Length: 330
Length: 259
Ligand SMILES: Cc1cc2nc3c(=O)[nH]c(=O)nc-3n(C[C@H](O)[C@H](O)[C@H](O)COP(=O)(O)OP(=O)(O)OC[C@H]3O[C@@H](n4cnc5c(N)ncnc54)[C@H](O)[C@@H]3O)c2cc1C
Ligand SMILES: Nc1ncnc2c1ncn2[C@@H]1O[C@H](COP(=O)(O)O)[C@@H](O)[C@H]1O
Image 1: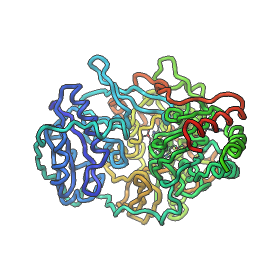
Image 2: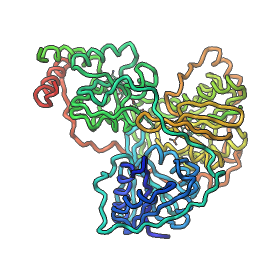
Image 3: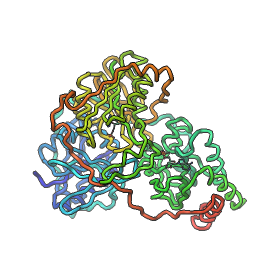
Image 4: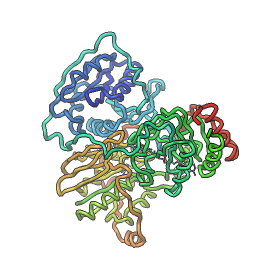
């Protein structure tokens, strides 16, 4: 068994993704804690420049995994290629960031090894000689201490921002880069990926809004949106929404805030009846002042709110509109 | 086209969650259950494919007795058949073991397409469909927002982060994990509910599936669940609604200076 932590480095547009640095920061911490070396693997058609950039981090090795068939990301290609690296190196841990790409292939890769993936971890801690990984369950309403059962390699993915990208340790000298040619045939890749695209141009750009009133499933029905609109008007705010509101067609997709919608950072963000799932939080937690109105005092949104009101939005919002109208300079 | 849809019964979204005596899961006797939201979208997508292309839709759940209700709902919405994988040995499985049992059930029937939700609201693994594809040796795609099917192949729209998408093409058979919002799910009609009573609902246990004992061995285990630690950063405003409104506006004006 190699005593190694192997970190998967995701990349887009020729640059390591933020997720790659966050995973490296997590991998370095884990490696220090268990007294292992830490290496990273980056896959693609030509990853020389990427590998050099990653080599700036304190690492025992950067594995540049290449094949013409790895030009575009595919789950078949990445699974087959990384499987070869893992078989050869037998790392103790394989670390990912819990991105859409990792969600797409990491479970498959772990399963090919006959191993498990503890996914979406907020972090981990040492408990004697055991490692306990902490992950959200029930949409973030509860945390679960989770441990691996059986033999390594252990596969783990960390949630966005579980580790800070700027906490990556830089090396005194560039790390060694090793090129590895993945042995793939065109038949390996069954699912073929097209170019990423965006839907028709967005009608609203919420990223520029100074204030946003966002509604979630607590608003109950489309007929109640009027109330949120009135609050938005009083505040000079744009209207935003959680995903289920847009899924139901109550508001158009371009009002959606979160990992699959827009990322916003207004001065004021008012969350009405939004539970604060991680996929929503990542799109708005950079807001300067966050007000959350939710009838469940355990809702995760209260972890990031500046001001919290535990109560029924239908009772709070009408007097709130009144007060704002009174106080606002004309 | 023969389609299998994996649906999971999970605690209702607004359920008040209490921990069991060992703090290893929630107390199931306290909560009501419903079909995991993305799985409802997956079922709807399967029904639409059948309406377009013919064939049949089977629904499959792994879960205790209560989970039969989820299957009945799916049959009422229009699924043709149901498989209920229920065995004392199937309790508290991780994603790997769940996928292994589901794979055994799917392999018996050889559908052209398997749909799952992208993630379960309770355990939140977001893995079962992907592992299932690996165990079946089929291609897969995740977080799907549109399906175009022909006889032997699929073209699907995969959601990426931040409002981006891509098209993926793959041969059948295949596994897709479905994202919420892909369609507008139908409600069961009275006629559907009545018709469901005569549709086949097959129970399958450990032996019926021909599983080896190690099939349900775990690769990860929850040692404890608990409420997330509070950062205590939020300032809570209390009182009658009017008073709260007044306090909040004052804070927004004088402290946060956003009005
Ligand atoms: C891959 C992926 C991508 C996703 N992308 C996004 C995304 O971009 N954006 C996004 O938002 N979500 C996204 N989601 C979904 C996300 O996980 C949550 O399901 C979603 O954010 C929940 O929306 P919600 O808070 O409106 O609904 P719920 O979680 O149902 O919460 C409703 C809240 O309203 C409260 N409430 C109910 N009635 C009242 C009342 N009368 N007064 C006050 N409060 C009330 C309840 O207490 C509850 O907290 C994504 C999920 C996945 C898996
Ligand atoms: N016990 C189960 N029975 C049927 N389907 C399941 C079960 N567990 C997971 N699935 C399917 O796999 C998807 C992802 O679940 P998970 O990997 O647990 O997040 C769900 O949306 C279901 O479609």
